[in-house]
Length: 211
Image (cartoon, rainbow, N blue to C red; front, side, top):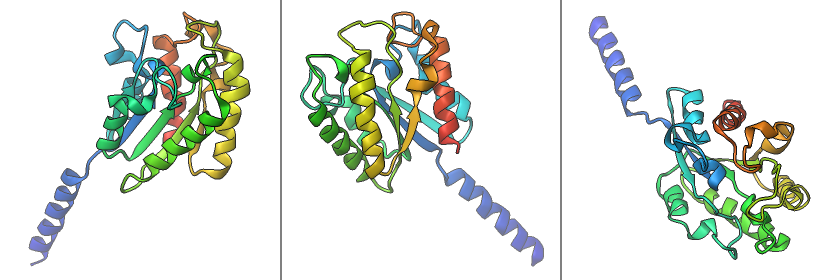
């Protein structure tokens, strides 16, 4: 009887482990998330490296879209990209948001709308069941203006708004800006991290997710 009970407990344990799915992490972002400029972004973009660092039990999905913005009125709103629909459809346990770099373009930027649209995205993701943990990244620094992306707007516009939203919204902040500000060698074109830069980003994000 005791042997049969022990066998039953073991079988139940194995069934539980086999039925338990990996923690699903979805990375929302722009070309920095997608891995623009890399020779093989399918292997070296930061979400791919993030999965490697997190290890077994995690599945990371890259939903980055080059050129995408948080702003709904811009040259490429993330809201209208199929990638955003993928985020909502894949039932994430964790969502990492890294948007704001392309919002800094002078023809896109609008502080009031940025705050409103960022809040709306947080609220939209919050409606997903069973309720993912949300992490919001401060954009990495821009070391050279390119594609109209403006570091001054990121520092004095984008970041203060995200910090303001943090006070009234339930998300964890990941500060990629200060962590990478003194490392221009990781951004060959001044905006996008290279493979080494993506690895540094992934390490910073992984450390936060594991807390």
